[in-house]
Length: 111
Length: 146
Image 1 (cartoon, chains in turn green, yellow):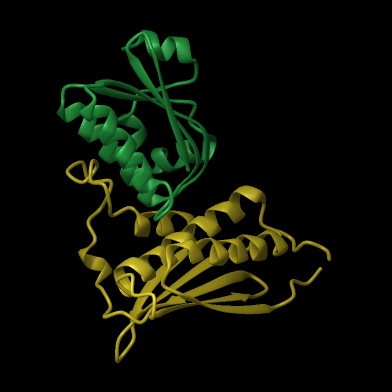
Image 2 (image 1 turned 90 degrees about the horizontal axis):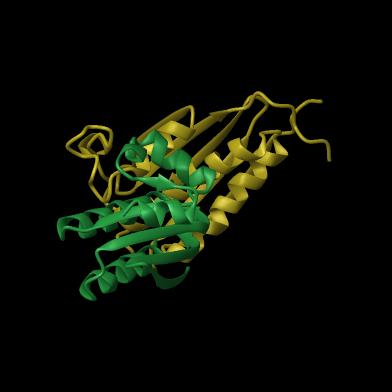
């Protein structure tokens, strides 16, 4: 998985591209979130538009990322959920946990 | 057109990078059997989760241990068997990921996804070690003409 980040109006947008699956991408996501939090970033928007595949391990990492950020008083939101990622969050009822946006400006303004 | 019976077997070493190989076989067989893209994807996902469990929880990431996957395409269903060489585990000990107290756990959703996307999921403990996962997907669509 490719991971990159940029900051817009104090919101750290972390772009994930490729697979977030066991042994491939899951640990990168964890590392990316840990580093952002260490750097004091507490408004994090995960850009999911480029995610091609996710499995239960990747879903678990999303949950872990959410917990890591919120436990430090921050907020983590999602943008651009691919339909199949959305389906996996739906069936496990995790869709009720995450704030999900389609429009980047709207997502940034929501923090 | 009558669906042609197929049987495919693959054995992999316990490495995560091998999971996709088994997943691709599952998806390809499903498409061949007439399932649409979405249904094929979800069967592949269930197989992915089963193989990942076998590697991680069954064989404890020991690359010397093997995971065997068998696909039997029959006229009305796809039967998938995934076996490992581990000590076996009791799926009854896996907590319900939909229970609010478990909602924010970072693991424990693999079996739930398997049960969601397949019509039947059973675990059998093999005497002498290992767990055999048996999953069935009922096929309603017409097979693809070759």
